[in-house]
Image (tube, rainbow, N blue to C red):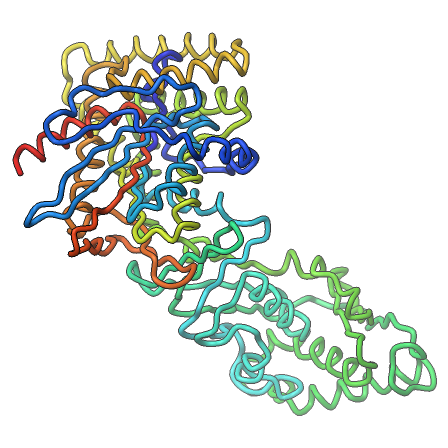
Length: 564
């Protein structure tokens, strides 16, 4: 969970709302030249080695990147480790630039990010290009809703499937699926087409491909299903042809002659189909059969480069419009196609749990609802003032990790829903004075947010950067004790447990990415353990986290090293 620590703004614990959608990092790339000038000035602001980490020093160089370095020497049973803690502020262009620079400069073996599984889809969405190139790989493809028997032109499910781009075992994009749905509609048989995908299970393969500075998601699915509905319009009049015979038809003497040819051929197609035989329940397909027969009959006589578009929207006649292929607009089918793969195109394994958590949030205590509203308000005010978006340091860190082919990237934070449930439990404990202290805190935050809204961009940037440095030294966040326990202390433990498991070469219970091949990163609910070198070479880990968590991590590091 990316808590936005803003003591000076009165919103220290007010982080991203569980329901928020991460948007886009727009500024980090624009600062590339400034990053290059700072590459040589990555500074260790503190050495937190075994036994002497209680005193943390911060570099006072204006352009230095504030970091805390934890080191553990190699022993007979442990690998040498260097951990670089990068304290960040969550609505800060400077923090995003720092994350990018530290990871690219140090090329770590592992990167830990203070973000959780519930928000990873929003993070990935922000890293995609303008065009959505996500890919699904189906284990099966079906067309559902067609009648038994033969349709006009000898069309059946097997024939239609053979013409689709969507094939078993082959990656298809959303555009491919839409194109296949359009192809089905152009047969004239179907009123609408709905495309759905069914995921394998929570352990199905989800892969991120990093190429040219953007992410493409590849997901294996059990099946892709095209559900079709018959063309069931109630026609009360005639058939209308819209064409210029001399330009579009291969051979015809006149419009009237062309229409006679089409009608005769359409009658033949309907007659040989099961729709005209009266066998079975075919009545719903009578109009569909007529429409399909007309489309086929026209298409058989068209020159190459032309196609026929069907329109029954006016309800009184069938309109056949011959147009050049290049002029066939997808807008014709837009309202009749529904491609919904949002649940499938996800790298989070908690889809149902997240929805349940969102539902639970609606029934949360009033105090929790107010706090969620305050989180959203705080982000909105500060983001608008700074023209920056919350979580930019996570986007920059993950992008730099992908670019550097980092072996392991861990989403180290506790889930937002779990944190909010913990806060609700504290409220239900009826701790004396807790609700009053939370109320005072919220009122104080509102006053501070109003004040911050009148600050200039430079003043706000300076305040955030000053607080970032202050929090990494002390970790003293101005909030009620029980609230601090939930938002800081409990999450410190989760963050540190992930870090310690990584440097010990043990599996973690946190999700993340591991580099599998070339520019490909597999996503897993539990990332495989980091392979520790046996030749005495130390490993390097970069941890991008909120500044207020740094003292807690350092304290736990010292305790763990003392036990060892």
